[in-house]
Length: 546
Image (cartoon, rainbow, N blue to C red):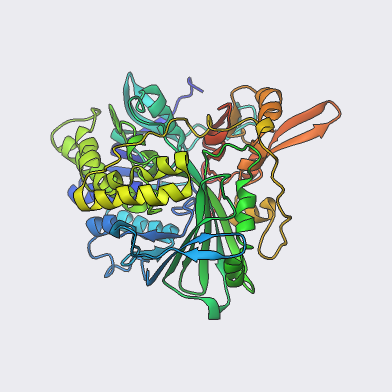
């Protein structure tokens, strides 16, 4: 579509993504200079539609952005009152006491929130400052002038399945800015393009990822304990994969039940979704959920590389924010505060550059702030926990990683230096012949559910007549390579049942049910052949998280 003629609109700053990073950037730009023209583009049907709700929020970013957030009615109300950590065995659990953990691991003073609702509230604050917010506008292309990013293409709709314009085709618009801030979230397509084309990861460790799956439950009021936070490790994953769970008690008898599987697992027979379903049958969890009902489901990838995996963050005219930059603190299971801080830092750098008469250059002040300010102070002390866990296992990571964090917390110095991650998650996948298949119990329909039933609780919808947004570089690879070598793991690693291997008269064939996609990006990350490319579907499509 390179010859398509599009209308163009000019702004001072164009922001891609309506999550905490993008919204914080938009608000801060208008706080610094109300005269700036700022547009924010969100691919979800509304702000918050693609935010997998439920998190423990460190308010450091919110405190900085809107100090009087309480008085302004932010939906940040359920303060953590109890913080528990367990290592699970199949039939029981061992409580890990809080006292050996460094202070940075404490959740007291933090809040259990729906990040979808927090983002909806942030959008209200942004609109009150006259930020233009356009939901349902997927950004499908970067607009470049030589090496410089000058804008994005947003809102292209009505393509036929083969990619040609259909009868209702709308070419979209070019939204151009003096600076473009990319805040798409984990493994966004524009961020991925920038990182590759400008070699932003050179000299840095590969990014690592986890798959986070979450259900919202309404439970028996007698079991509800608002403000209670529980994290677990161990069963059912054991030695098959790193990861763990979280259980957060909100108001209204709601419990957020989540499960994270690190995507560097080797056994291609592993089925992350079924590990999550099996987890809920642990006696401690089953007792909590019995008599309740699941009301929502969702999944997303989580950036886990930490400090050593943050790529170069700027190119001429553009910068990477939040999860596009990989700013999650893995042991704390928190990234929203760093996303907001990155949005603030990028906004201040862009506003200062525009005030100085600049445009389209690199926002080096933003990169400096990320690598030397509050985000660095949050990520540096914990930088070895993930690679130690990956290389040595759970218990050494608790001991060695804990020691490293404690010393760093007290002195600002990591005695273990900086460990490397090594392989990408895709390259970590082993051959199917080297591992035993895993027999998973059938979901019972009460505590555990099949994938397609659960996907219906993500309220996902895609217009079926559009091109498939999950593209294969080589259509023959799934059956020719991945099936014989890896038992085609896409059948299992996808938490939405998008990929199937079907047996026909002419042999097996690979099927992509893109309508089920919840935009988690796991396929783009974990496919051992790196043959699947996640791109944006037309705007408004995808999950609609409540």
